[in-house]
Amino acid sequence: MALVETSIEIPLGTLAGLRSAESGGVPVLALHGWLDNAASFIPLSEHLPGIDLVAIDLPGHGRSVHLPPAMHYTFEMAVHQVLDVADVLGWEKFCLLGHSMGAAIASLVSAVAPERVARLVCIEALGGLAHPVRETALRMRESVNTSRALRSKPLRVFAEKRQAIDARMRVNQMSEPVARLIVDRGMRQVDGGWVWSSDPRMTVPTFMRPMDGQIEDIIAAIACPVQVIFADPAQPYLPDATRQRYAASLADGQLSILPGTHHLHMEAPVPVARRIVDFLGDFRV
Image 1 (cartoon, rainbow, N blue to C red):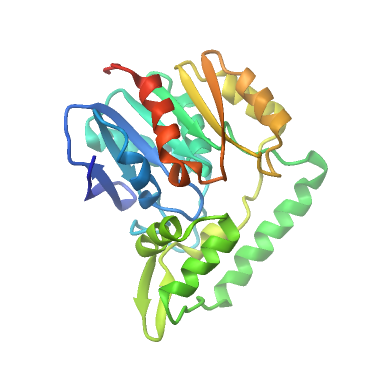
Image 2 (image 1 turned 180 degrees about the vertical axis):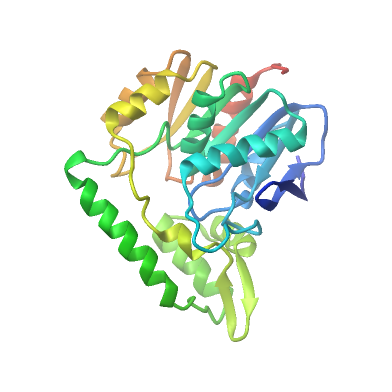
């Protein structure tokens, strides 16, 4: 299924994205992970027939609009932005597909707007990430200090895209073709080379994360059927025992654990797509 460039006007501004050339399929809105972009769904899209897939660059990522100065990126705002996109698309009811941060956002949308989300697919996240209560003030301090330091921090300029590709490969355990997809969509040319097009404010730690019990409550509030896909081995920040417990909190969920890295939907798209296609089946909204 080929994807073509698209743009969507929401109250915040213009969001860029990729959409399947086919129409009339199951409406699926895809949300990428932190500092990724819509290109992260290209490998998967090739194995998702019969789906009207819209993969957006979330605000502050890829080719989409950044927030105005002095504003901060929050999950609450992200929920509204996702619903704004669905409104513009004319989708009263739709399916959500999210990876990592995108899966956390998709979980929140599903929990707070159950009348809008028909089915949910979460890859490598569910509900969100908790933070120890006793480290609350420390996290707030880190968030404020990082945010204020950004005001005088210049963007890193890469002489060649190859340097950025190598960096993503090292940090995210990505193969070269997969890292190139993210980099090609996520950089812009400047004098002397290339810089990331993502908003530097996206690197600021979240001011406050929810507590573990709050995440379980969010997950339990998701009414639609859910397909969760996790990679084996688990990420250090989401141990297997925790993610298994979160998945067990779903009212109507199924869990698949596949061998792979955090970006398994890019590195191993066939088995991931098979789970998604089987889950959606001949479903129509």
